[in-house]
Image (cartoon, rainbow, N blue to C red; front, top):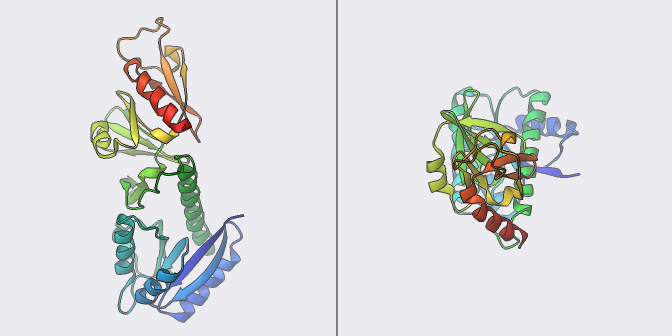
Length: 273
């Protein structure tokens, strides 16, 4: 069983005590409060010598506040350093938008209910599991992507950032693009051509309507064109010359245009190596 290691940061001792008690009462996911800090500066000093998976972070504190501290972690992530995930725990709802811009997993307002905290911790555990699964499928010498390498989307009225390393594919449908991870699908604005230009080294164009993460391609097969609806390159339903790839984790098949079959074969050969 994986244990989430948590740093609690709040300037009020009673708030830290209550949060520790809530964490210890949660059995799934299994969590452990490994340290506490009263300020952002104390938290930063602790993290220089220790590691954790998650920071439960207050916003308004003396000196370096929670938002400044989270911003410093985001800058470290952008430089390629591993940093813990963040869940804000605060009495003030006004900072939620800024918190999600800083890639917070969740934003909890005090007094925190145990059920609400448990849901946030479950999302943290899911994010860590997806990140580990994606990294495990990459070649051994591939460095982990910085956490700041992300796609920003709007999810039920709030901003959310999805690490590019967790994306299985992008698929254009009508005026929107579907972003698929192992556990979720998100609809976003944008164009595949822009995504390909920004992240083309990690993704493979398999069709005019789809970009697939190179590590996520697991199988290439001939399929009847009618299985996949839209045909490409002038193929007809009775041509018998239709291809598709199987995507890891979700066990989905996506159509491959004939002109991209060779590139997909090359990507598969690289994955095996």
